[in-house]
Length: 402
Image 1 (tube, rainbow, N blue to C red):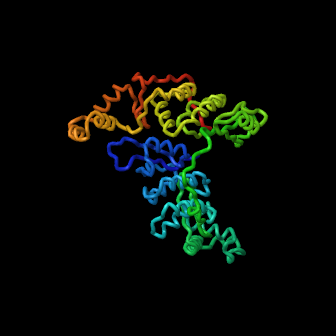
Image 2 (cartoon, rainbow, N blue to C red):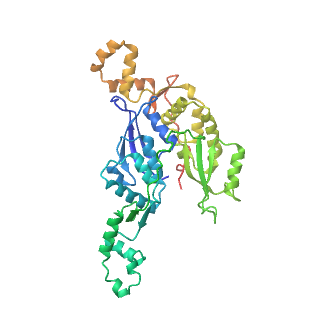
């Protein structure tokens, strides 16, 4: 899934909080939830966010702003990521036509435009009025030019023909960019009204992990590189067998991963071959029984332990009860304030706080706990011992997305 926007998220109006996240859109529900876990959002809380980069469709930089909803922006990115080259050109042209109205373009309208790339004509060879006029004349769009001899045809004022047609039909020229080669775009029908019935409510996936696999052509000569098979985990033996049947005569032999989505980010870096799937399935069974708060604590533990392999990840999933997780802390300053509010009454804490280096005090407290401040919160062992790092046992790189 090609990414379109890069965004930065943080807690709104909380200067002491270091809780933040970076996210690329379109994001899956699990990727979105992971960002929210890092922000420690309470129910109904809306995060601050801003677009930090445009991987595609830079023409939107003058249109988009942070007043639209995050789910709306993700829905737009999802559709844009699905467009082919011609559709990207059509979108750019329809956007330019909309911008000529000199009115703000709401995100709902942008989503409608992204779903309406078939409501316009795209002339790839026409980058100016001359080329447009020449195209119209050569393709019998001008009845008076149909029976002209070649000598007379070349005397036609193609630039005037193209300009008059463009102005009459309200078409636009789309400049050549990295996203599209440039073309003439002319709208011929109304935009599709897609946004109104669109259901943007977040939906929890019906899997813990989802992998896509194909046969690598070097390992299986003659294999169809477009025949991708998906498997949702946890999966019963019958589901593994069904996936194997879909892969054909060679089964799992010579298969490689093509895509991955899951409740725990970074797990894909622990996968090396499809032979790891049974072990990944066992881990998914353990995670399927965890509550959301436990899953967040588990993600913090994986980060704190620098876990790099599936075996260690599975062992850590069985040891959550040996750890104390405090998601309310995102910075040493918050840890320090939390400690002061515990050992002092509110009035005393308010008096002493301006005279304390809260950052250094918080760092000292974290060291005394043998804790680790992760992107998800503070985690420490119940017995006060240091959290042991996990050495990376495989010698190869992580899962390679083909």
